[in-house]
Length: 250
Image (cartoon, rainbow, N blue to C red):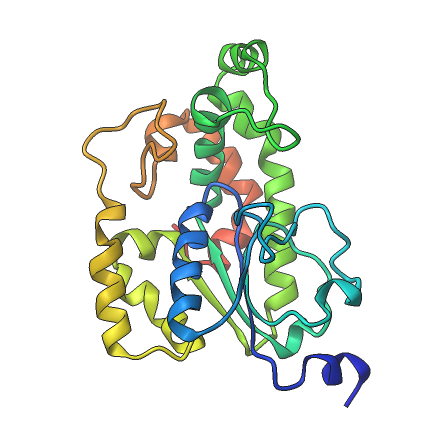
């Protein structure tokens, strides 16, 4: 057994990877609940900064073994891929959303709903007005290639990893109980916990009316079809062709 294997031997580690605008804050919430039920520690960048379980996945050099020394439990949501020590011997859940809908959601978040957070999100009102004038089609076209690389990196990294379970945002919205199954398996939770979790969170997926100023604006799959021009959709379909096939999106 190599040094990294010895470092993490006997310590359960679960990593939850995703992207921004795929209900990542909900992933934080449910990961915390799952961890509590399973008796695991939960490390997240969305925990309070003064908490011993706050973990900055965004800015630290994740390949540094010292960061992980003494840490085991659940880590996530992690919104970028990093070279994490001994990742291949850990349980992984990769939660993704139709990239075309992700880009649409990014636009509404940037322009309308995302609060200003120092060091994290600092768009001024002038910046937002500029993006609004630019328009949603130009916005998504400029960002499509970068998002495609992020998705491709994820799929290439975990393609041959039998410890990785890929779940999708759309299933979470349409059939939350089925989406929850892989999580319950990884966290070693039974049917009683699953029933309680479904009852607790089923209301998360109900929106009476779309509101651009609401952070949870629209959860319906296929939102890009209503918000983007036909030519923009054709271009995105070309950029994301391989990913849409691999993830079984139309």
